[in-house]
Length: 363
Ligand SMILES: Cc1cc2nc3c(=O)[nH]c(=O)nc-3n(C[C@H](O)[C@H](O)[C@H](O)COP(=O)(O)O)c2cc1C
Image 1 (cartoon, protein in one colour):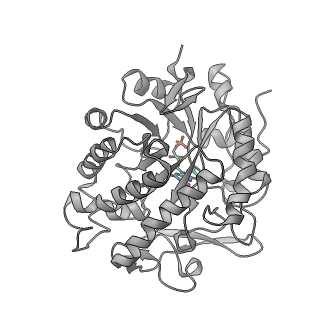
Image 2: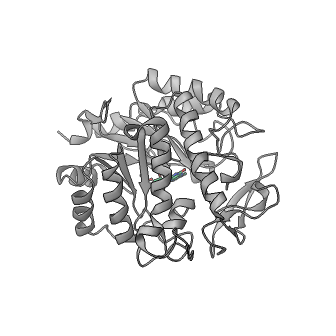
């Protein structure tokens, strides 16, 4: 029997299995205001046979947005919108974390009242685009612009925005939050030497580059408890102009510091394109030595690869992204070795029920 179908403990939460639905932006909030809605409740509830669901990346403030129609979790309307979503998911048996993000330089003045986005340093990401839609829902990809380097006051404010959004997420019924520290967004921009040229206590050495992440984690933990906090990191990605030669040791240092804070989990966003290099085994061993709480892995997993990392003790839970888009009943399909449906890439972002809530269960 595959370990995937065993129950698992995530701090005080008892998970029905070791299968996680990975965070996936689907850009289907109600406008204006990026408000979660009933269609989103149906979408997540259809997939709630997963032991744990991590929500799509969710804004912590007005200036944290980089793509059209992604949800927020920082005002009363957002909280009221999320509440029926979390209720519906929880009646189906899954636990539910909210992924909190600030996109940093992966943004555009359209989302910033015409101002520049903020980032550790004034360095535009080369060949990086964001998706901007008009009121009719028609969207296009546009280049990111040069950001403004954050002042200490900006850093302090964003840290408190993360903490406030975490409080609101718990109020909205989430079991906890996942701090998005990967995929080239703000926290990741602080971690890497290519996007962080700061000369203050947030730049230069590894200790300095992990400081912002740790301050966010501390502020969020103080408000909701470290046992409700997960962190996503992406050691092997290079997209969004994030090729940093020092990222692996930086992330190993961060993982040690996160273990010391006793957070609920560390979530690795692994390289997931077709011919991506395999994650070296010595990295997995080094990570496990430093982080003994729950490790989640994601990125191109099928049941065989999942079993391998679970059996070797490199991970405790395995997240599936794209397979969950087109297979709402992914858990039972895996358990019963039924074929998986293909997803339609044209309906991933924005739009309506088509390609969102209309994928059928296995007949
Ligand atoms: C449509 C789509 C949207 C995504 N949005 C997010 C996101 O909001 N936050 C995040 O951390 N990762 C996001 N990802 C990455 C996934 O969480 C996951 O790491 C990736 O899809 C690899 O897993 P898979 O091979 O099982 O799909 C997204 C991926 C897809 C396909």
